[in-house]
Image 1 (cartoon, rainbow, N blue to C red):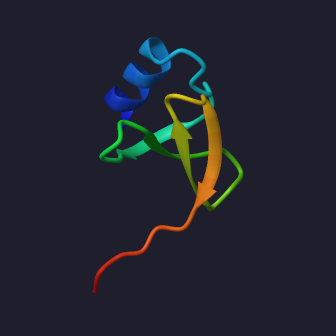
Image 2 (image 1 turned 60 degrees about the vertical axis):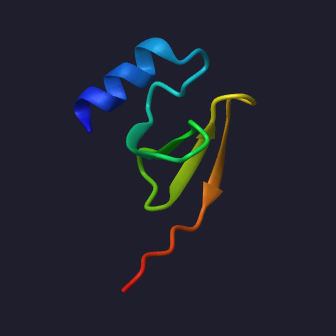
Length: 59
């Protein structure tokens, strides 16, 4: 996660510097965690905005 987060922070214009990248979606957006929050967010690389999301895991 450290390397991916560093890459997003240095290469993605407008990426929130406090965000930690935990995954990427099929559309090229980052799934992130924000400090002080237990929720997951998606950072949209086109709009450069962060929106809360609900992740569903198969059992």
